[in-house]
Each structure stands twice: as C-alpha cells, then as structure tokens.
Image 1: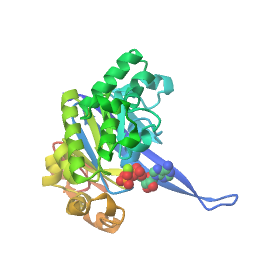
Image 2 (image 1 turned 180 degrees about the vertical axis):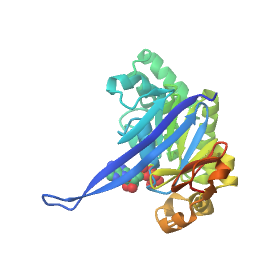
Image 3 (image 1 turned 90 degrees about the horizontal axis):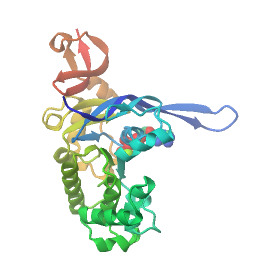
Image 4 (image 1 turned 30 degrees about the horizontal axis):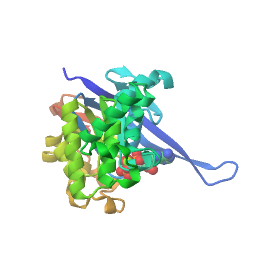
Length: 316
Ligand SMILES: Nc1ncnc2c1ncn2[C@@H]1O[C@H](COP(=O)(O)OP(=O)(O)OP(=O)(O)O)[C@@H](O)[C@H]1O
Ligand SMILES: [Mg+2]
C-alpha cells in the first residue's frame, strides 16, 4: 500500500468580488478552485499544470493552509488539518514548506543568508543559536553555495542563487511535503536546469514528496512521477507522467501539449489555449459498459485505466 504524504479532498475556493460601488454593489462569484481531489504519495513528485488562472497556486496555498478553503479537506500524512487552529497547526507547518517563483521578495533584505536559512530553526526553537548557524551553513553547501555565502545579503545574489537559498530555507526543517510553485519560471534556461537537478537530487536524498506547480511541460515531463491537469478550477485529467504525455485523453490536455514550444513566461499570458465551446464539444466520451459504471450526462472524473482519471461523459 502506497503511503500518502498529502491528500486534498474535494477542495474548493470561492471569491466574492464586489463589482462597482454604491450601497448595493453587484457581487461576482469566482470559483477559483472547484472540487479538487488529489493524492501526493510519499517520496513522489506530482506535477500540477494548467493555463494561467486555472487555480494551481490557490490549490497549493490551500494545501499548506496559507489560504483558507471554502470547502473540502486537507490531509497530511493521513491527519486532517483542515480545521486546526494556529497552535495545533504548528507541528504540521514544520512538515510542509513552500518555494515560490519570486523567492526574492520572501528573503528579508536586512538579514544575512545564514540568518535567513537558520530562521525556521529559530522559529521552531530547534537547537542553540550556534547549532542553527552551523546547520544553515551546511545547507548553503548542500544547495551548491559555499559557507562564505553565510555572511552575504540577498541583493548580492543572482536569481538562481536566490532560489538555492529559498530551497535551503524550505528544507532545513526536513519537511515531508514541499510545494514548489513555479520555482524556475523566472530563471534562464541553463540556470533553470541546475535548479531542477538540485531539486531532483534533494528529493531523492530526503525522500521528499513534492507538489510541483509549473507551466513548463518539458520540466514537468522530466521531473514528475504523475501529473494533474487543471482547467478553470477543476482537475480534468490525472495520470502517471508517461501516460499524460503518450496518451492524453482530454482535449484540454492535448491542447496544452500541443502548445509546449510557446510555453514560456513571456507569452503565456497572451496565449488562449482553447475555447469553452471547443472543450465541451471535445469532452471525451466513454461507454458505461466498457468502464463498468452507470452512464452520466454530466461530465465527471472517471477512471479509464489504472491510475488514469479523465473528466468525461459516460454514454449508455
Ligand atoms: N485574492 C483573490 N481575490 C480574488 N480572486 C483571486 C484571488 N486570488 C486568485 N484569484 C483568482 O483565482 C483564479 C485562480 O488563480 P491562481 O493564482 O490560483 O491561478 P494559477 O493557475 O496559479 O495561475 P498562474 O499560472 O498565472 O500562476 C484566477 O482567476 C485569479 O484571478
Ligand atoms: Mg500561480
């Protein structure tokens, strides 16, 4: 039986946005995430892909309890952390860390790199000040910097070096789960490859479980064990990485794969993959008899082969 590091059950997030002013402004409802269920097994990397605005970061932040879900549950190592208060959550905070695209803004400019990397140990009261600094310097080495970097400041670093520091800071508490939200999107190609290699090495050494959020499907292909595809707040396909790339079932997954060469941060905002009408017309259909489940007019996630889930209509 595969052990689960992180599980999301039917997670959702709804925003109510006031449109206009006055005494009774209109309120628009935005379903940023709608009913996402995901399992991140221990010691595996799960990729979360989908166009801009599909709800990837919202999902990642809710998984970490850095953003409150509107509904659903979050389980860490089997424990439901959805309703835990600040105090009860603290031991779980140690187990779950995050690296963002723009880690620079998260690094305090007034602190040395040794202080920045040691801070989580300090917050959780682990070890003496001396031990905390020693561990931080060891971690700087582990992420490919040397100990002399301990006395430097964030502004002295390149983008790739900053991401190395962010990774050291995230991993110094030896978390079980790492959420990496576009950790390499702001980096040049060669630096990006180095950071991906570093993450890959550390994952293997530490037995980390990583939720890897990315637009970069070539990175996702080389790094992840399985992939979940998000569209407009929901998961439309989830499968082992080979199956997603070799045998995509959903029209939206295919459109994402077709667009790989254009998937760079500069033009991703402009890119519109596929229209809602095309998606509706192209929603896969499977026969109920073949799947051994009742027919349904409403598209939902169905299992089309072991470990391969697709949003589909099940025909009689
Ligand atoms: N605080 C907020 N208030 C209102 N709407 C929000 C808020 N945060 C996010 N959204 C909306 O929720 C939706 C999902 O946003 P999210 O950032 O999760 O997308 P994403 O898939 O991470 O996109 P990107 O690839 O650009 O990072 C978007 O429509 C976004 O505008
Ligand atoms: Mg995002």
